[in-house]
Image (cartoon, rainbow, N blue to C red; front, side, top):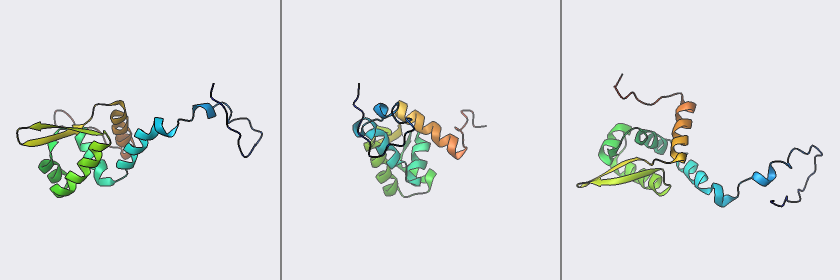
Length: 125
């Protein structure tokens, strides 16, 4: 059983004692914090959302989000270092898409729910 820390204030409500052992440590939750930090930028958030739905090269991503290719490349590096996207080489081009992880799937869902947007239709309707 995890040791409960001595708290500086005691409010006599007893509500904290049942959840304190479950507060995750920094190492456990660090990857989520890093991912959320990366998605705190509106441009990266748009790129991430796009890559949750398609696999694209830098030039096409830049055109779709109306940014320069160097700016998109910068954002892609940060998203990739956080494990949110992956890349693969196709000839001379690098193609990017969202990683298939529980974290990415949850973040994708949260973005769509909070922004009240939905996944593009597979049929284009």
